[in-house]
Length: 551
Image (cartoon, rainbow, N blue to C red):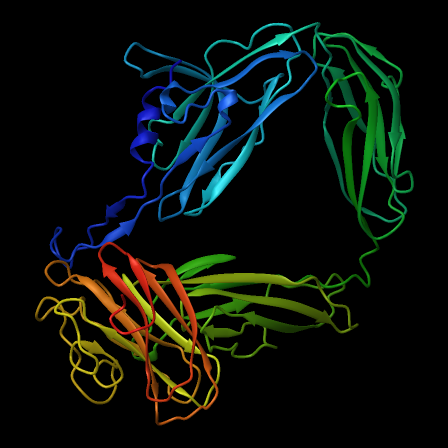
């Protein structure tokens, strides 16, 4: 069995290690370097199918001997034990050979295999989550699978040297048929009600070594579709033989229509075989509903999802602009606009004009801002909703956000210095009295390296009469000997009295990623609630549960 060097890559990247990002203040790396979180990768499948938990390099996907026409399958689990999202770039079947050094000599990717398949879909795997897919073997012949067959898994940590897992299996018994169609899915598109589409001919054949026998051919929607069974019904097809059937679309009502052609046969694992039909019934253009089109722009970028740098010095937060000017009406009737905005936790922003074509909103906290547009024409017909989303991502390496539920109570955010350990309401504590950007009272603390501003804290948003948000940012926290445990606490300012317990939310971002959200309530005026302590540069976070000292 040969895994190649890709197996070594998986073993090396299985831990959620910290990756040094090297963000220096100027020039090369120095004590201002910061850390970024790294993803991990693990894979497993049932031991009875060849997985060796103690030695992955000795593992294979072993189906053993399987009777022709029957199905043998098992689940494969991919997990990300790291602390950042893992990009799984590709999962596919291939015939691969390796040289005497274990390096890949040649590879042939198998787009379709007649007996072996997987439903694996590559994509992003968030940290701490798993992804499960199936390996499936249905032998058509009484022979073994070809040699050097592998499942290949490539992700961001092993892109240059993917994981190759051998696949072993053998068919036992007489050859069986394998029904197929071309196409397997027929989309008729949009057709006006009462019209009939051109004929769509579908080829039905046998890709297996056994004799294929078909019997009945049925259609489940004979109102909007029609079927001519042709030579497919009650047919006998040797390997390579093909018959034809014909389908048409003639919508009788407005909207989406779907139908299924079912072919009964002696195929052991696809009986009946299904061909999906779809089409849209459309009335004449006059009187049709309008169409909403929307997009959002911020930070010089336009699209449905945008990642922008987020900072609010002196309350000067970035602005997103939503644009519905691409909306239309088939009869060119006048349109009115109606927008609704969904906000991330802690945001207090609003759309500038929910009924305008191009409203805007201030992005005051990190998170997702989604605006949904519905347009209405002068006949009172409304469109389907259109949603455009912008993601506000902090560009500071260290950011804490505070918001609370009920107004009339003033909550204040505090951050204590790591080294030397800060004392509340001194220059070792960043809060409204000394840290407010462009604010009143005190001198901005000089933390870390003397005279360097990027490692100093700033209270960029401060809110007194409302419900927040407030935030404290450090663009690039100092390295040794100034690194260590920062502490976050919230003070219930006694100048604004609110008797019931007030729900409070604190978000902690590190390296632009939301790491922790804490929800709690504060009832005592002039009290301090210690939220968490944060170690820099490791990124470790320990909840304090209201206790000073954070045990």
